[in-house]
Structures are given as C-alpha cells and as structure tokens.
Length: 211
Image 1 (spheres, rainbow, N blue to C red):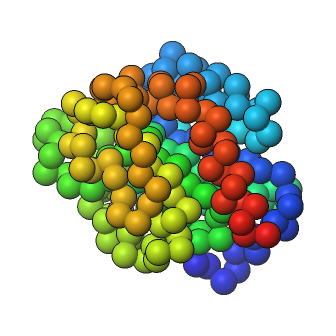
Image 2 (cartoon, rainbow, N blue to C red):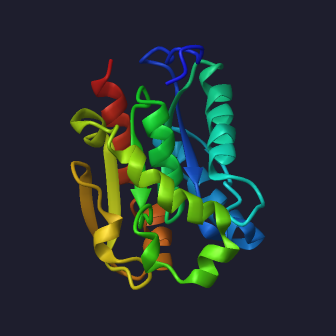
C-alpha cells in the first residue's frame, strides 16, 4: 500500500459501492442496464458508482488499476467508505484493488473470472489484452490476501456457469455462495437485481464489524 495514500475514512462514514463490469463494458446498452440495476440499490442505504476498466483498450492492466485507485480516492476524499463489486472479468480488478487497499470494508465478486487464462480462447485474450494481463497478474496478488481479508469477500456464483469453469468463480477463504440460477450472463443479471439486498447486507455488515 502506498504510504502517501489517504487514510481510510471514518468507520461511520457513508458507504459507496463501486461496481466494475466485465468484458461487456464496451457495450453501451449493457453498461446502461447494469448502471441502472446498481442505482436501484440506493434505497437499500448505499451510494453507487460504476468504473469501466475498458478491457479491450490499448493500455495495461496496471494503468487501469491505477485509474481505479484514483476513482476510489475521490470518494474517500469526500469522507465515504468504499466497497467494490466486480462481475466476471471485473472480479479480477476488484480483487487486485483490494490487495492494494486492504482497508476497504468489503468486496463482492459475481461469476468471477480472475485466474487460469488457459481456459479462455486465444482470440478472446488477443482482443481483450487488459483482461489477458489481469489473468496473469491477479493470481500472484491473491497471496497477499490473508484470512481476515478473504472473509470480507462475498463470491456469488451460478449453479452451472457454462462460460467460466465453476471452480474458478470461488475464492478460498471467502464467503462463497451458489445462486439457484444457470448461466454466466444470467447469473450477473440475477445477482444485480434479485441478490441486491444480500450484497448490500454483506457490505454493510462488514463495514459495521470494522467500527
């Protein structure tokens, strides 16, 4: 962690949930649907925002993590506490950010793909270079997440993903929960809508436990 980074805000500060979508963050219609789904969480007591990694951009994964850092910084500078939610490829980004910022109260990953690049078709990795880099980077960062941090991660997965190997969507030591839904994209949509209360509850509980 950068010693010059701002200290974590006060424990009773407002909660901000930053959602990081997966490879579909280049599709305007999908981004709109996910943004609106997350905005619907506000009556549950959290503020929301979206960060787009832009997985197919001609940049490095490290550069995009730096950008995510700056995005989180702006909310913490306002006195907010920030929790991260990542779907699919976005799971790797939020786990990497958590390794950098261990003071974050909670992280949620949905149908996450953050390891084992050999399971992904070469043409996909070639097109989504940032994603390719993340799959090689994130596994090495997971070792820095100790038991206390991993317990602050909620990993939601479908009963059968069909796109991501089922074992890849779980994180050892995290709170791993299987949803009664089949499919990768459907699992993400289901989690953002029908599991919203569970996600926000987890975030709020973890934040409260760190007061």
